[in-house]
Length: 172
Image (cartoon, rainbow, N blue to C red; front, side, top):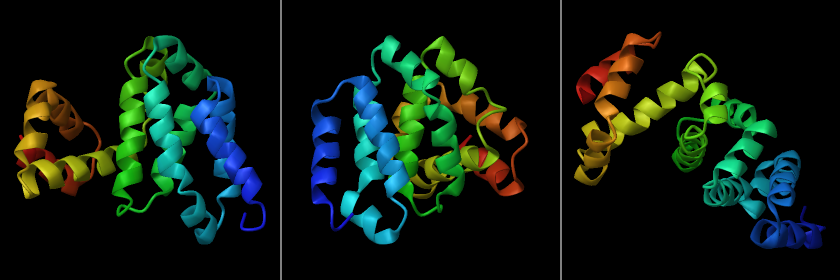
């Protein structure tokens, strides 16, 4: 990557100006070439790619294309491989999955059995840290308004670890 800056410039241009198919293709190329720490730092591809996908995924037809391209499975796999300290990336992946879940195809793909236990636990740790541990009012209010307690209760009733069950109890 250090020797081929033109490639990176081209990918950034496509992410900024390309159509949906070329943007998704560019994201996949970034995933393939970001194999070492130095490349990850140079590209910062995960966050930029996820931000781009979040931005473009508002129309239903684009959400459907994202589902059909298999990105939900890629996102779930990436969640399972991330370290718990990767909060920014985890948050963006979860935001993208939330956006995709607003269409029927997205909900079908992201059913509770398909989302990994690890991904659910990461999401709960984030919510618990922000809402319970740090008691951030600006985070607590949206959770309350979006029927978050019901969702937390459902996760608590699902097959989760004892520590996540305790976090759910703290949040409720």
